[in-house]
Amino acid sequence: MQEIPADAAAGALRSLLRASHLLSADRLAPVAAEHARAFGVDDLILYLLDYEQSRLLPLQGPGVAEREELPVDGSLAGLAFRRVQVTRAATEDGRERLWVPLLDGVERVGVAEFVTGTLTPALEEGVADLAGLLAELIISMDAYTDLFARLRRRRPLTIAAEIQWDLLPPLTFASERVVITGALEPAHEIGGDTFDYAVNGDTADLLVLDAIGHGLPAALLAAGAVGAYRHGRREAGTLPATAAEMDAVIAEQFGEERFATAVLARVDLAGGRLRWVNAGHPPPLILRGGSLVRAPDCPPDPPLGLLTGPPGVCEAQLEPGDRLLIHTDGIVEARSPDGAFFGEERLADFVLRAAASGDPAPEILRRLMRDVLTHQAGRLQDDASIVLLEWRAADALRSPT
Image (cartoon, rainbow, N blue to C red; front, side, top):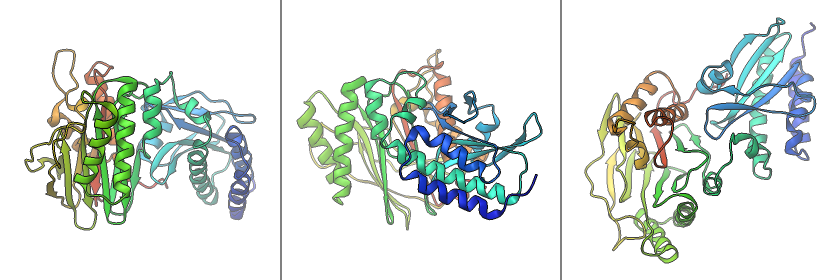
């Protein structure tokens, strides 16, 4: 086969970018495949991650080769997703198949399958660039279409879960100084658990919240609390002031019998100073080296909605490479059929072992949630959510190339 000129890939990328301005989401898969053929790709299939982060689901369309869904655990496509790296395999007819992670920044959207007769360095570089552009298009289109959300649900979401998924920030963010990633379960039925974060200059703000109750009432309370949290944070409020604003919203809008436990944390990314407010919540955990280092003892304040005065502020000093874990009680209080709690020690040990094996931060939490579910024989008795922050962690995320 004649080698495709190196500038063919760049031309296809420019053409796809121009076409994307008036491209509907249902046409993304076939139009992407058409542009990929212009620089030597026979087939291009996009796979999106499902809400449970256990399956990769093909995005179909006219002219796109048909495919079945694939497991994240136990497939080459899943390996590319889990390890955030390109994987290769030969097809039955002797062509090359590349699995390339779809990354929006460092957020794992899914994977792309490229099939080609001849793999050249220029083509390999081109498919990596194309995968990056496609991930960005998927994220931007997801804001105004239901197509991807319908694909990602393998069974119906509750209304509460619908609210919570739309409330979340990207599951993963990373810069040179920090990695933040979160997870929550049960994906299709989550009610009162949620998290939020923002990175502004040298400051990273985190929230993990557990609204009392289940289902829609808990989701509505969580939505109000997160709205108040974002308002306070964006007004540059202190942690106690932001917690007080959340407390007031919950008390005024949901009554005396409704409340939420929460940790509001703030990390100085320049020096590693950690400050937090604990409103009736499990305390943060710090993992340093290969050990669990408990945060300094700091008695919690009452839950949000029940505060009787300004909450106190707790402080600790992070060291380079530290991992900060903030979780809801649904993680550590997950109970096995014989009554054993998952517990803090098991949580810390799992994260440390997964990190030692080379898993990037989002994969650690994906696997952790699978382990928590397995511990409870496949079904959680309570919502469970967790946020992991890595400060100046070396090689925290792998490159897709």
